[in-house]
Length: 362
Image 1 (cartoon, helix red, strand yellow):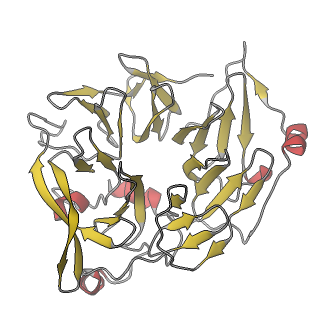
Image 2 (image 1 turned 45 degrees about the vertical axis):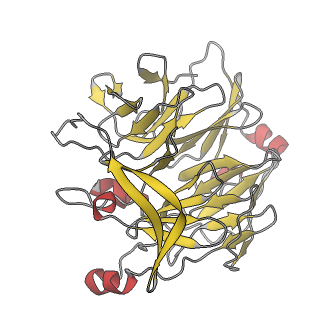
């Protein structure tokens, strides 16, 4: 986990570029797409992110080689040579107009189907909850103390209010290369509220009116040593929340709790998953990423211990291998057809075939 934390917080610059664009036509003249037929095309090995857009094109974000777009017949590869500001991809999402937004270390690019542009940033700190806004985190950008909100025109740089643990944190830890406010994950719940998982200050929820915090030591710090941070948030079919490990689930109440200078999430902690034993013998696992499938089952991806499926009663473990080698995993994604995909750190993308996860080959 310490190795992973270092990987995700490496500082990478954008070489001073402020805007960048590329014509799709000129791009194809210089770098024609690869037709998939008898040819076997290998994606980059470090595929961390998978996304399906409204045109049913699949996007694969790599840690170092940019992004690949697959339309079912041919594949296009985009990198800094084509307008991306950074080849290390950390997120892909889409607005309701079909524009694709690619988050990389230190940068956000917008792709409108023809060209890449850089989103203009406004340091407005306007905390607003609009249903069509997009939310971003940019890991690796120094001095960041909050997320970004895109309203269709501008990228608003936001700052969290001072956390009640801030003074104590800096007194003990001093200044680190990363901020304790770094946003590791962003999640929208069924009510439309936005949740933020941070590196060291726990969880923050924005309900459109206030920002409230929740911190439990075992969620951020791994039992036995090491820092995990809040890397995954998921609401289950019963409306209960899971935060990056299986020890507990949480019943969240609509009202907030205010204690002196603390603005807190009001919740009740419940028992998590029983009868679970991790490979090293612990009764909990820490998961990097989680989704709910079409049946309402939870799928939780760990860094080094495969995938775990929980149906509310029993839990099933799926190892993920490349030959005989166990893989380190980064993310899980459910596409529009309900199929499940994995982003791995060293073996490309994997897809669930109904029984196991197998390597995706074009």
